[in-house]
Amino acid sequence: VSNRVFCAVAFAVAAAAFALSLAVENEFYIRAAFVVLQFLVLATAWNLLGGYTGYVNFGTAAFFALGAYGSVVMEKLAPLPIPALVLVGGVVSGAVGLGMGYLTLRLRGAFFAIATLALAVVLQTLITNWDFVGGSRGAYIIAPAEIELLGHRIGYIRYLFLVMLLLSVIAVATARSIERSRLGFGFAAIRDDEQALIATTLSGALMGMAGAPYPFYITYLDPASGFNLNYAVNSIAMPLIGGMTSWVGPIVGALLIGTIQQFAIVTSFLGASPAVNLLVVGALLVAFVILAPRGIVGMMARHKGG
Amino acid sequence: MVSLDLLVSAIVAGILLGGFYAAMTVGVSISFGMLDIVNIAHPAFIILGSYIAYIVNARLGIDPVVASILAAPLFYALGALIYQIYHVAFERRGDEALRGLAFFFGLLFITEVALILVFGVDYRFVETGYVGTTLHLGPIYLPLRMLVPFVCSLALVGGLQLFLTRSFIGRAIMAVSQDQLALQLMAANPVKIKRIAFALSIASAGIAGALLIIIQPVEPSIGRDYIGRVFAICVLGGMGSFPGMVVAALLLGIVESITATFYGPSWAPAVAFGCLLLTLAFRPAGILGRHA
Image (spheres, each protein chain N blue to C red):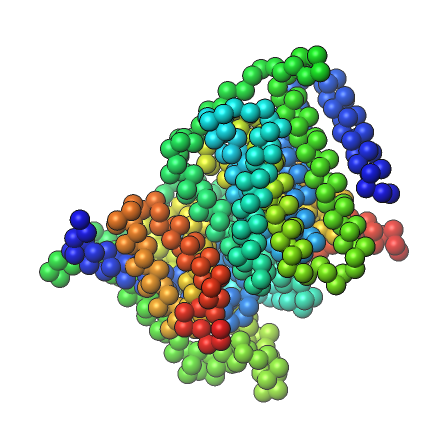
């Protein structure tokens, strides 16, 4: 299927999902779906680098938080509509990704991984000390209750959900087209520094874009929630559990793990706290890398292939 | 005005701090520097060591350092178990780069969250007779809270260095870091040697944890603050070299202490990260590296 047809189908799926969401009365479910899609974008973005070039990024939270804090800064300086903020987040995080990649990608992959881990700690320190964005106290963002879209008034959370749906389409279409161009040009070019650099930049940009709407969703952003390690753990666990070799894997992982987590939070299943959620994801990650290194998609393919 | 006294005491405090960093890093120098195993969960095991020292100290009143030495065999066994899993699941499949890293990342989280679930996020500290005492040498202050970990740390690194250079197994570990094939020709099993080395690295993490909780109160997630530091020191020191690592640890301690004294403690983590990035960008073989 060509990229153009794929994009058309993906947009149709997104439009159907949005139409379906309008039928859901309880906005609680829309909030949960927003979070799952946020993870879908992050997992797909992570896999652009991890799945296709083998570089491990532990700093998803840093790129995500950069996008979120980019929105906070813009809101204080010159308020912009969400799509513009998404672009700002993408540019800021993409630039940081490019810089990180430029400094460390020519070395062994382990150094890149360690550098991203340290990046998250240091950026959090900087933001915590930056009073303009609220420092450690955090910043309040006032989101309107409703917004007018094509002549209809819809709840703001539905609008954010729509933005995240479109971001998901962009992320998945990007992943798929990179995957296809890679296969097309042959494997010789994969280890190429320039390709890795492009992947780092795109991956960072998508993570920043996913973070940009977050302050309006949460309405109160502090360093602890923006840099929550939840993002780093899930964005690594979801592709590894779903399967890293194709764009389908991160989607499967994100929808599965994300939905289970949201379900656990909503129903307080087994007294689930955020800590228990993290523990479960961590344990699943370890179990999958040891027992099923190809992930769910890999296992399915093997069954089908016989 | 920069006063000389202030600078001198900042440097002394930095040396004490840096000496302690050597204990935190020595295990990474073994696992990452010699065995090429990127154990990013090392600081999590250090925090586990802090909590074990805390429990033993609170329940039985035993000195944390003594407690950590008593617990060292447990950490050694834990390390041997982790290496065995790592070897079977990743090293043998040639899959250590990506999934091996993810494995240690998962271990980091399991350890941290398990500690949070058991102990909560409150800061814990130990009670010893010397924590509040400070020695005065003219204008120089030597708090025992820092001096004891400093001395223990150098003893730990020195002991490990002696073991590696003088004992048969130690030399085999050094050999495995250079050339696995040569070791096989000597009829030594490289997997067994690597298991011993990795187990030793985890045992050193347990002891470093006890030293950490003497220096400062500990809560489960502070381990993450040290990941950047220990890997920066390990790389800066030239990966597997202990003398280089100690020099790098002292340097980082001094730079951090001076930064904290003159610019405020909130900038200290940025120092380690800056050192790490600069090292990776300009001198990946480290300051005393054998090969550039």
